[in-house]
Length: 342
Image 1: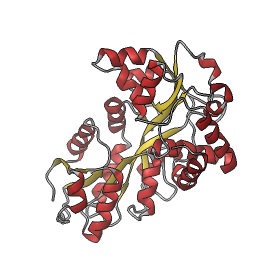
Image 2: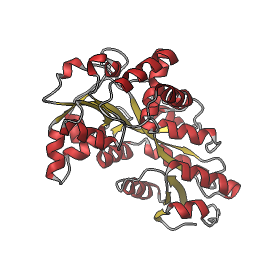
Image 3: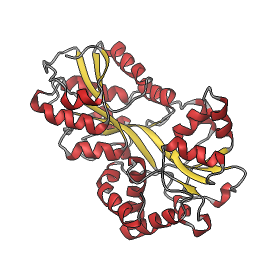
Image 4: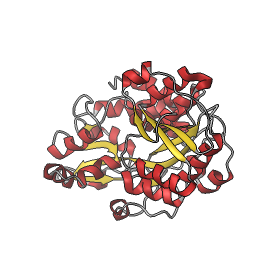
């Protein structure tokens, strides 16, 4: 088995990699993770401390891990696959990676919106796709919803990532669910018409674009903003201070959220330990580590949030079941293509 603590394999090794022995052990669990946060080590250590079960971790991006599990077949040592975004979890589901899990603990601890209807995978941390604005150029009262991003009055003022970004695909997937395909396409076309520039860069670049005046409004996941606010770099903090955050759609469905999630791999050699690990991720201990480690929102009600998230106060989140974001992903991609969102 691969060694305890994280085994991080480069792309070439993941594609060509040698097989790993799949001998099950009563005292370990093997996690294939597309989460690349140093803070996750605290999750693994806390699980081992609580249960005595050793955690072995192999990292790669989601597509690499899916490919590896499929290539390894029945000999795969993988017990759990962890990744971010419901769209990526759905892709793994479509490839037959996960098995159905029926856990009373997960059913009790996790909100229904965070549970795949068949127990194929579960959401354990929440990521808010927020709207950011230049404090000097925008009255935040004018931007109350994602729908407002398509308002012709914002022509040439919006920064947002490309259509191949899974976060944007899931946002559009939620628009499909709420407005239908025709309404979602009309919205996407409106956003394209309002872009300040062709999509480029990651979420942090969109926020920087607002701070620099390249655009007035941007869309990004909340924790990228927190990283700038808490950066050791003076320029990062100065940029963040020029930008405000909006949690859209408080008057109706609530702000769009996505997840960090996981499922038990079909044929897991350490299945009982895998289920136990997922149940641990729903515990207050793990939920607080998600919150403190990457400034993600806990999914379990009442768990303490990171200080900066507490400072934002409570706001309404969309309670759409996250599995829908995956189901609507193919149509979201087609809409992006039709409207020319590159």
